[in-house]
Length: 340
Image (cartoon, rainbow, N blue to C red; front, top):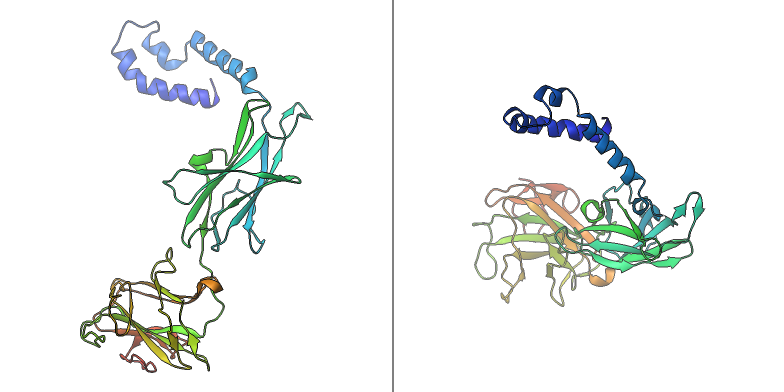
């Protein structure tokens, strides 16, 4: 007995041999016969049953085939994946995604017997939620469906079902395991090519360096305008979460003058009247902080800094000022950075 059936038998006999054969003497076969080979009638039964099922009409009905699945950005119409069959993890921006599917109709022998009854797209933005179904529409030779936009950082899972249930009682999936082996892509962050305003200096553990207008020692960061013009900050955001780019919005009438600086306290003190106070704090263990553009400009990340675990009252700043990497600097909020 060869192949998969043989492997199953070997594993079964190995597991049951000590329990059922050696310890129980009322058997049809002796222990040595059980060990050295499969009893002839049992082997014949398994092989005949397998042949019967492989040739059963219910298991050989015509089935539609999914030959290719492509996804692309709905806005830019740019392809971002070649095929769902290979399932490469792909990163896309925060835009709706168009999924197009090529199928082959069910066949009897070499003869096609009609298109699939329908093709469905299933998706979910979280591994632990229920898949939502979309009936895909026929456009020339393709079936097309759309997955809505999701926030940056979201992993979207999806798979395709082509069915001929009404005509032949069959269906097929791509990937073949459907929900259990779905394809996926991750929603990335739109990043601006350049920005007039940068995150220039920050302090994640402020115990005695500088106090906010309320007299408290809080986390803070400094923005610097590199341009020759005043930049309106109203509607822009600061965040430390990739999946929440709009965590804290600059209030109305907030701007930064040409070549100027502005300080933001990261202290979760939104009710404070004096100064700019964001609704999050920096982690002394390190994290990423991002400056995000307005809704009308697509919430592109204008600037981002990443820092490691921090010591008390140590400032990090760009060096050279406004353009370089983060280094330990003297505490100079509102002024040009100076190396320690």
